[in-house]
Image (cartoon, rainbow, N blue to C red):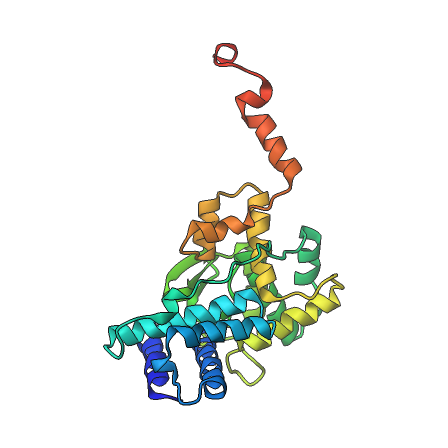
Length: 299
């Protein structure tokens, strides 16, 4: 791996406190760019690439059919990489900043109905240790809206069953306290019953090691099939479901933003795909003009 890329990744690891998952993504994107340059532009290197080479790379990604979201992510990686090199004095400009981000097709996040969510979280049956662990995992994903990386990174000392909350470190290593609800608390208490360990990974494999993101995804997939859900379920779908059901129950959008750990309210606003009939009912019940009242009529 080129020294410039190694240095950039070390910067992300040490100064930005990026998660292992984020680091793997950045490294993969930069390796893809390096591999493209080696084949298409002999002698070119990522740290010295020019605008035309970056544009050609983006064009190549379009031609091979990569999704626009993935292209945008790779372009964002290159912008961060060159911004770092500029700050370090390796080069003066950031050529990736001149390449426009592909327009994204707006897709509403996938989410489960209330019935489907209940079927999923109750799919682990029996009192075996793995079933109790998996039930707690599903209840936490749905009951607290956590990212899979946040769930995998939890330690037992982060959990307060007495208060019904958990301390979470999200993107950018930002800390937040999240309530977990009665059902998730009960599932966690059942999972931890008989354990004398007060510290260390919350969710563990049979050998006692921390569960990985990939293992948690497999857990969700397995119980999605067992619950006979109509579509394959990913952990992020439970985060979407958490936010959607909170909104449908009348929760404030800014409160949901805090619970999800979104830096921007615009990110949370993707969950405002509420049923139009419900929105119209709220309008009819609350707005004076919907009732045909004037200021004189209504005082």
